[in-house]
Length: 262
Image (cartoon, rainbow, N blue to C red; front, side, top):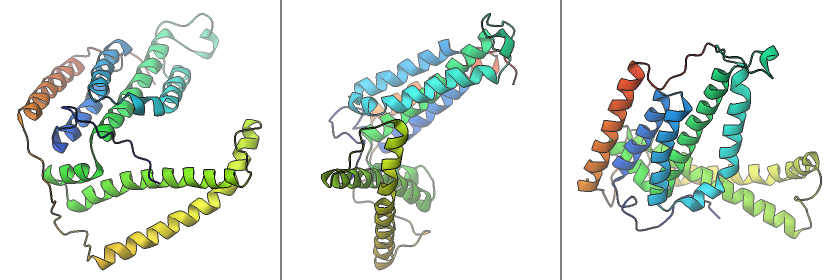
């Protein structure tokens, strides 16, 4: 069983060229890095959420809500202790926590959330083959595109293998859902051995398959179906270029950033 985030919907976002979607996610990342103030990052997050809504990717967002919550929570809790500002928080002034540090922690949490949801948007609307093709047509060496596609494919395969191992052990009487947190972790330890065996076996099969087909890392790969840029692609790229350009200008002039010290 293979776990995949791709959703086979017929939205106009899914019909965009793979290069457009890859550059759009790169633009999301650049926009997130341009600002540190949570107010401005909320605007960027609204753009990403809009893209997720248009792509009907709410199912995958629900799957990732635990990871997203943990990333934002850790940033809000930890960053205020590592940055300095001008306005101390009355309750935590002894440990040096300031309001600017709290805002910065919230901003870093929103930045991570933008990047995670941007990646979810890409994987929800783009197949692995599209990503490999897009990377090569954007000028990257074919071996880099192959490495990306293989990494994304292996993540799904490993997650699916882990789910299969857990289901097999549950059918044999292993209860992994009861007990304390420490007890649950201990119950998952025996599951690592069959998972490692599965990974080694699949890796060996993949190596033999590549050798039998004469795979060479420097060879130029061809594709049966090639994407084509359309009017929607150019419109999205122009809109994104304007956003990135304006955000870069704002960053250059110190707009949307917090005055903190590390």
